[in-house]
Image (cartoon, rainbow, N blue to C red; front, side):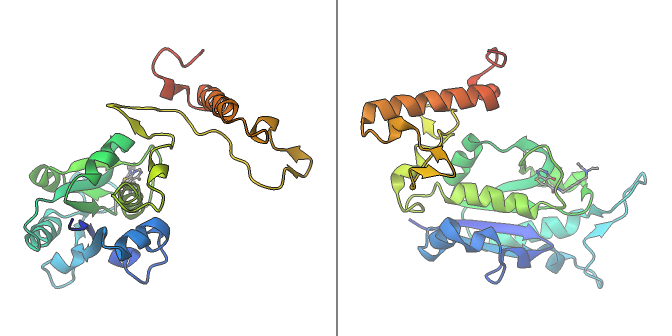
Length: 244
Ligand code: 9D3
């Protein structure tokens, strides 16, 4: 299998580079890259500015604060990067206006051969280049970041760990909170975890975990997951269950 290819278009490509102390250069993503499961490359939108001052933004029509990223540099960067590989690239724009990222979306991205992530900065991007490129627009949640780069890394991290061979223990991808089982997602939070010592600062490990009765442990863990989900994330149990 060829590695998943991820291109990132950004005005801060150094954030993704081999010398960056970013999440992509540690743990599972770093190992997956070394194993040839994924490859990524950041391209500077500024390289496609096409003007003397490498300007990629301009003042907003209609007034207001901040700057707007211009159409042409982004369009030319996408065109050039896509031409470097014949495989179809799924275009993804990281934006606060996007659809909130879910594990279902992450799973679908993990099946694509090529992803092209566009990370904006400034107040926003000229709407016409969004219309022209028709990217999938993705947000990572209802809070405000200073740019799309960290959101791009979060999406990359979530996708890369799903690629075959990326996790040391293949099983561990399947038993987590949002793991897929069948067509739907089993959406339960995880149970609490304990390791040695058996008592720490007066806090004992729950007795059931020490007895070695596997069925009892499984039952306790399931009850813990259900109780935690009800208390902390009733929305995961579906509409109508939020007050129960
Ligand atoms: C006052 C208008 N702001 C929109 C909330 C402007 C604005 C703020 C921050 C425009 C862009 C940004 C930078 N954020 C992202 O590019 C971004 C983001 C985010 O801020 N939150 C959650 N997901 C994402 S994905 C990209």
